[in-house]
Image (cartoon, rainbow, N blue to C red; front, side):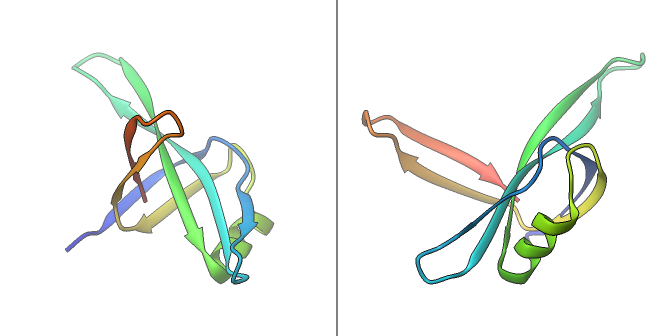
Length: 93
């Protein structure tokens, strides 16, 4: 089972684009606090989020930078090659 639940704040406004077939896709980053050690030390992870179709349009119309949200989805790891031939991997929800 591949299920991820994250809470955090939007690190940027969602960017909504449309594919050639007309499907909406929204992408944005979620800033999630991570507590380290026993003190008050914490850091922030920026998790890339992708939403499709109607949900993408809802995200684009209603979410703004800094707004707290809860995201439920699946973790996807994909590979691609850059223009200069370097192989990259990216994880997104």
